[in-house]
Image 1 (cartoon, rainbow, N blue to C red):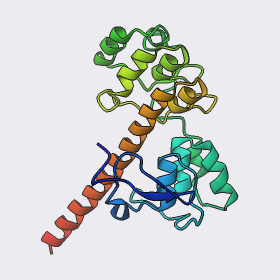
Image 2: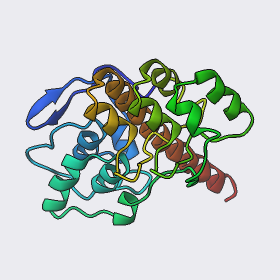
Image 3: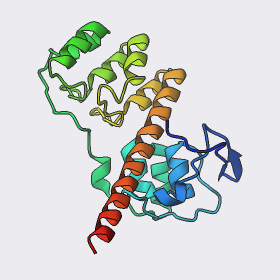
Length: 219
């Protein structure tokens, strides 16, 4: 789970939000109010402190917005002169570009979960992109295989899914769900994005603590 503590209360657009549970280690993770508003895809704070603050992984709020393709917040942050690495925005995802692949993408077009499971176990990647830049998960959503999409989204860690992968139109899985009115799946994807981001930051935190402990013990 992404949450530690009780209720999350932070100000976005001058009002409290109570999404999920409170991130009581936000200071240790280097998360400003801007980071949280990008992460939760909420309206920006009225008084934006930490506009260019870097989190524990070195990302500014604009970097995070690029990674998660928060297009509205990207425009706002850029208009305010926020700092960010534009190369992150152009990054398509973890998978390989396989324009003529049918092995993993064709069963996804037809929503065949069992075939996708079997081919994953044989070494296929569910992050590989076809000629249109779509991953198998893109195709599940585009073709309306919502039950199959839900199955893989709920097991994103198990299948090593890159939820931020973008197709050639620049759309992530969550973008497609929102464009198609699949709001329940969009919420699942938002929760998974938040979980992945906080999990990664906490891993960075653990690595730094372990390094510091090792350094002290060798002195």
